[in-house]
Image 1: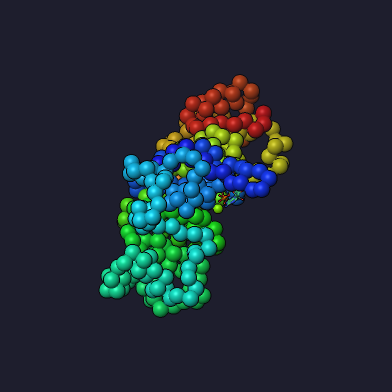
Image 2: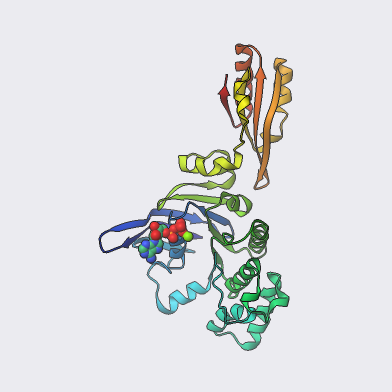
Length: 334
Ligand SMILES: Nc1ncnc2c1ncn2[C@@H]1O[C@H](COP(=O)(O)OP(=O)(O)O)[C@@H](O)[C@H]1O
Ligand SMILES: [Mg+2]
């Protein structure tokens, strides 16, 4: 387990000082894919860098598997860092070295033999799908291929933890999906604890099981990804997830007669025949005007915009009925 315990990071300038991280506490279980999401400047990179102590915290502790590493230095720190791999938005490859030598680099530092290095690099390039690029220089690779090299290099010394700082933010959508699939796959195969920071909720949705939401150096909310998407509590989180389930309605819908409501379904409820039940029970007409279902962590999360035309009492009864059987019902008009 990785425990970030009450970590604060202050930066000082000539005139002032400010807290880039303010009393953050997070517990990341072994083998999970944990996301930290927030807008630019929230403090995500600073927080991530405290885990391998590239950033020394002003106060608080970093505890890995019950060992407090906060004050480690020298050989002890080097040993800890060998068990923590890291990948970056801009890959940070050494451009004057081949793919082979980039991946071999951390193995050489760790003192592995030539033979062991050759074997391990071969394995790693296989794992990331780049067996044929061993002798190529980074400038000849696409962004996605560069990140694959970054991943292979990060895994060289069999780390237990993989830190990913915006790993797909420099990539197009298709490449992003391929890299996220690879990270998920590696997490499953190797059981490596993976911590991903990103400004995109889509990245969180695709690979994480737990998420912490950061704003201005503070963790405002943390929980299972599905819960955060289906029931965001903090206004900042609500804003972040809004676009995922947001449906743009044509303005004319707001001028028609009857009630206009937004229904959110989650879990098993998304697959229950709630609508047909309501129609049968109340004998009302319900029009589906708009809708979508997303699958997060393989569980459905749905949103429907419904129009109901009937007398007031009947409409209210239908809304109550739906409220009891779905995650939430919001009345837009009526
Ligand atoms: N070494 C540093 N010295 C001074 N300020 C820094 C330093 N590193 C980061 N910051 C500031 O801390 C804040 C958080 O930065 P960062 O962790 O990079 O945010 P994020 O990764 O969420 O975009 C920003 O305001 C940034 O300018
Ligand atoms: Mg950053």
